Length: 191
Ligand SMILES: Nc1nc2c(ncn2[C@@H]2O[C@H](COP(=O)(O)OP(=O)(O)OP(=O)(O)O)[C@@H](O)[C@H]2O)c(=O)[nH]1
Ligand SMILES: [Mg+2]
Image (cartoon, rainbow, N blue to C red; front, side):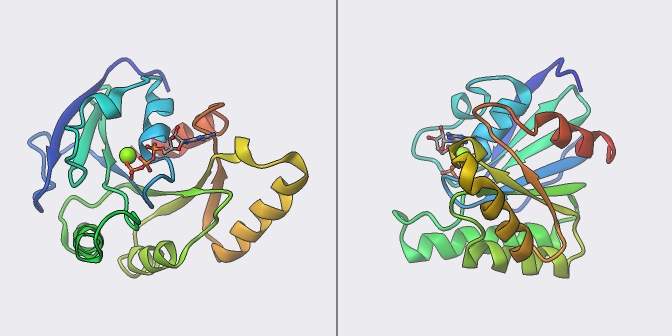
């Protein structure tokens, strides 16, 4: 897929995920620091598309990026950020749950971004439960594979695949762009 345009469209803190143009939405979820923003930057080949549009300190927005005037990539706030208060964390998780359960803007696919080195955490599994319950299409993006030593990579990815219980797992690196074409193919097939 050729990226002709990638623009920050809006950031929301509430529950209104509707857009005037009703273009399909592709959601990126995951723990803080798993690399959601970096994956979006690597996909769009824009170094700072995501960061540049983020108001410093306002980490609670879900940001919409319009690609080729064809679809939206949604960068959600990370869940499980250790430095946030428990209350704030719960609020964040609840907001994401709401999107998954009640939003009319059903995403075409959810990319659940994880750090390959860390694997799937409790909170990721919790998220997957809600995703599956609501019959969303989901692909687990095992990001940061560049950080896995060659000798350990196969074992680590195998254990993620086991934990994913049949869900599709895509090996990815926002740093080297490994997996980028495969990820675009998934999007192309759905929009
Ligand atoms: N080596 C390597 N580092 C990565 C990769 N992806 C992300 N990082 C680094 O991981 C850190 C977190 O990346 P972000 O993209 O900000 O993570 P995020 O999931 O958007 O985090 P929040 O916005 O806090 O939810 C940054 O220092 C990135 O440079 C990758 O594929 N390889
Ligand atoms: Mg981010």
